[in-house]
Length: 102
Image (tube, rainbow, N blue to C red; front, side, top):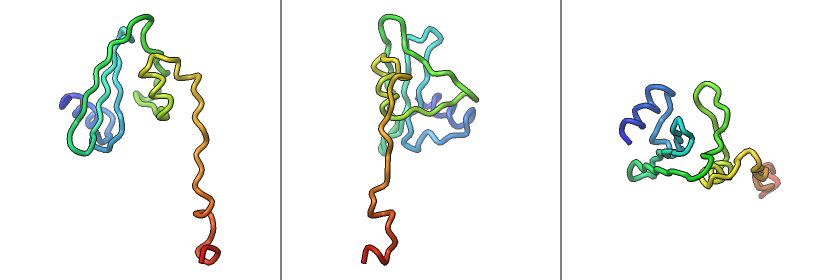
């Protein structure tokens, strides 16, 4: 896991201790490693999936971003491209000016 953390820092200039999940797949698309920092230590999850393998997204510049729902689908072996996340909105109270709230 230290090697993967170093790889994230040196090759992508990203912080492996940010709380983000960093997902790596095998050439055969049947195994993934997930690296994350949980606030107390590095966590490494390794999964081998049976069947056709993980549906893997097209990469650009070596990195990409998935929503939480898309990652969960990927991890379960579901075609993550069919998952549509709900739109996220700030609560309406934060859109009001301070004078309107008081």
